[in-house]
Image (cartoon, rainbow, N blue to C red; front, side, top):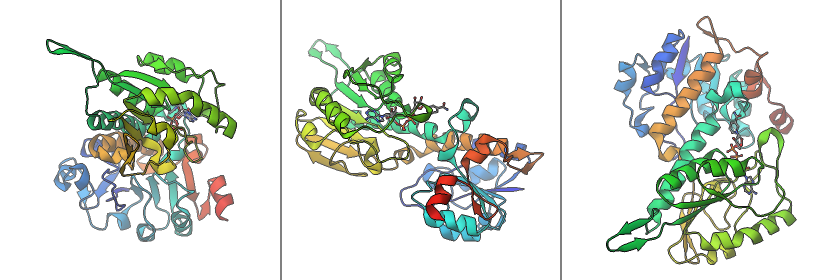
Length: 371
Ligand code: NAD
């Protein structure tokens, strides 16, 4: 059977779903691996590197595919090139991509969405949300350090002592904890806040100070956060305001599954920050944690430069692709039996991540929304 590696076509997408180091894992399972020409170009991987690893490079890789692996959802024209009965494994935000979902259904394609892989222990090695959030969190801290025109660490020199920068991180999930760890490694004093009960201990375990706003925690299903009420949001803002005003760098990473990102910081709060302060909003493209942040741009609010994240993992395409490709290898391995792609629809990872199969939409919330 053949696994094709897509050349990503979305604007700004530099990642690729498979890297040469891991091609051998797929061939070891019994697959032939075919790569679309130039698939790794933006991640600085040459076609020849894939060939040296045992893959073929073919312009008609999609047409030949039994399984197409990709980072972004395959565009509808790519879906039409797949044969009926083929499968796709990629990110597939079904709420935002109804046309692609219906094209997959109508084309008889079995599709799996990486963001729907259940977050259970057995599926941790397939969890692409986590692997890419790790890249994003690191990148956010590095961007903040790069934009701030002062030191992160304390410097004690013969010419005097330079105090460390104060970094405030809001949202301490996978990305936020990685931002905390990175800012700590660079020597900043880090304070962080998250609504989940478990978060304070996780923040402290990274060596940061957990901000206590003396508010109830907000636990939702599956260990995620719940949405805030308006009243709670206003109180949280009021109590966070002095921490934001004192920060040299503010990094926001808060999200609530299936919802717009919560607004945590108003423009008025940013306006109270000191001259030269920086704000990095990872959530800018999903609604924004910071009022006025624009995805993919740096805007000035008051005295602060505000950086809005846009496809942040793609800004480090090499490592992001390597981690994503490992997630892909692990999920494909789960769905392979005796050298053939044969997903077991009794397995909750398979059923949980399946969007379309056999000409039908299998993901219930998507089916209800579209049919
Ligand atoms: P996420 O991207 O949905 O959200 C990021 C963070 O924002 C979360 O920690 C959330 O609590 C926080 N947040 C939401 N609303 C907020 C608000 N109003 N103010 C401040 N913070 C707010 O979450 P994630 O990073 O993908 O993961 C969150 C949790 O899930 C973590 O506990 C993580 O350890 C857990 N997790 C478990 C698994 C697994 O078991 N396989 C995998 C990944 C993550």
